[in-house]
Image 1 (tube, rainbow, N blue to C red):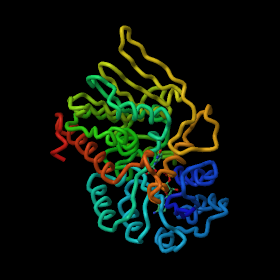
Image 2: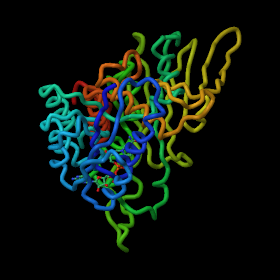
Image 3: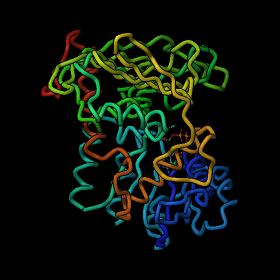
Image 4: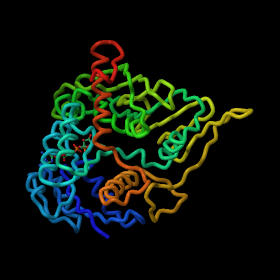
Length: 376
Ligand SMILES: NC(=O)c1ccc[n+]([C@@H]2O[C@H](COP(=O)([O-])OP(=O)(O)OC[C@H]3O[C@@H](n4cnc5c(N)ncnc54)[C@H](O)[C@@H]3O)[C@@H](O)[C@H]2O)c1
């Protein structure tokens, strides 16, 4: 079995989460490829220090070019602030390495297009992060939608909702400022998670009407003063999408100010004869709608039926670390040619497609009208 030697650039929240997913690789039964972390790069010495606990680590550096020069690295997971995506992703590709990018895949549409084009030119294997569709409930709604058991399609809702920003005393960070998060704001933060399944189902919006909200525009700077927090906090995108030949509404919701939602990922598909919905708020429950003589919503208690088999018992509950590992397993398997019919990570074309929707949303907000995707 071959082993994917992964380097990590950006050893913050997500860099460490990814390293821990790799450390539990032995839980995976049928990926067909091994994985180890061989190199880390972070500007902060404390971040690099954390990675010393990995026995496979051979390179630790503050300069990502040093990591990219290493012959011990086949592919790189990059988890850095958004204004650095384009430069570092292009450096990865030019160095001849494959790339597991973080969302939003560049700070804006132009950056995303540039990265996708260069990846194609250089023939590198590139995918982008979005882990929630690997949940068993998400997979079941996806399969339901693909099987077309809806009758006449009625509507789709895809949402990702946070609430920690309701607290005005929460200090500002790079994700709350346009210069480092991007003008798309919350859409850059949460949008890829909302777009992955619709785009994989071929449901790319044709027209977007956006309602964008900024609520707290100043926040504590963590040093006793205040600093601007100029990103969009909430984005409601009302879109038209073609499903089974019918044009129907699809609502895309991305919110940092959603009362009571710590990290709620939701996907719902409704038709005249059938429907399916799943939310991480009730993580074991798959809800299926059936219209017979009587109408019913049936609740199915899900277990641990992941796309990649693991040693974990079938009745146990999956969580965030599990789906991140599943996503990386999918990246490694697809790169090695062993993915088969299992679910794949976001492709560069899908990442660009998501950015096209976000760019249309910004234009819609500026001009106060619905914007056709053909205009972006
Ligand atoms: N998939 C998900 O669920 C998920 C969740 C959170 C964040 N993210 C994404 O992951 C990425 C990183 O977010 P995070 O929350 O881990 O951020 P973070 O701030 O916790 O970590 C970023 C790290 O990058 C380092 N860094 C900055 N500049 C660097 C450089 N030039 N070279 C090397 N290291 C550098 C910082 O020192 C920091 O340790 C973003 O793209 C974000 O959108 C994804």
